Length: 414
Ligand SMILES: Cc1cc2nc3c(=O)[nH]c(=O)nc-3n(C[C@H](O)[C@H](O)[C@H](O)COP(=O)(O)OP(=O)(O)OC[C@H]3O[C@@H](n4cnc5c(N)ncnc54)[C@H](O)[C@@H]3O)c2cc1C
Image (cartoon, rainbow, N blue to C red):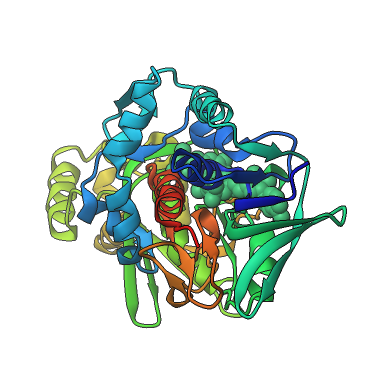
């Protein structure tokens, strides 16, 4: 095997593959090193195997979908935008479609078809790929990178090294935090990695009683340290808590507060299209005109019946009670809690279920115009290993492809 390349890429996920492809298109000799025996293992499970690879939003919308600061991605998302990515796959006979939420999927509904496009490009460009090989050390002299050391001891020389090892989430796919160790060994600051885009474990037996019930449009509210966040969208009750897009997106914030010595609460607004005042008027009218109706039947106009029953029991109100007998105090409580039903969050879901990692390489130590480290010459970062992450909707894959492309585009010969 040749032991010297111009560009060495560590990690063959979407970011690493795209960096390799772009650098090879620009005639650099490229080596792609992947720990697994195949490329893009995580890509294959994205979007339940259908791969929601990007979103219809414009640049400003994209920048608003990342934490802690999406603005650093401006150059990457301009150099290789959502349109560029859609066209890239379309040119290889994989057109795409959008759903009502603006999320893009390949028409094949198959992540495998996108991976095949990338693999064919890698073969065509004659990019050397080392499988089942782990990079364990970066070689550096006078703050300039000159190669990598592999798990079996081999040293490979390279002018430029790209770290695209992913984060820590779903470690079974290969992303087990290696990039953080490698970056730290170069003097980079790495913030605490936390599981994100992940479900919540809640206190109490309500979730289990409601397991399987989904609510298509509610608002989740979270207050902490005098700050306030909310996410609107679908949720689903699970055996131990809740999941669904609104929960996953809120986890980008809540994950920072776990583990916690103090109880932490989220609040559900079950009827976001109405105000407390409006609900009060509506219920008063219904109670007056339909005094013989059971309270659970009336509330079923707003939320699913099974949820009504548990909701009322949680307020110590008999679901079978006739509306004529509902007291003023009970009505007040019902209205208040429909708009603000509190649950104590026990924990964030585990790493094995988290779709992404929050945290990573400190943004201030990366030059986001090129993806290059500000500390070590010739060292680059792309994809999830960077300490910026996005909401659900295709933003994370777009970021991986865009930051990978940026690095491949900006590397310059010495
Ligand atoms: C279940 C699930 C569903 C998801 N669905 C979506 C979705 O629909 N849309 C979306 O936008 N995002 C989705 N994501 C997130 C998305 O998959 C990631 O953001 C994306 O894969 C990150 O790409 P990456 O190239 O940075 O890292 P990864 O895809 O994690 O790739 C990193 C690669 O580096 C390799 N590696 C690690 N360390 C080393 C080492 N030391 N030496 C050699 N190789 C190494 C790993 O084996 C791995 O192959 C989902 C994630 C999960 C877990």
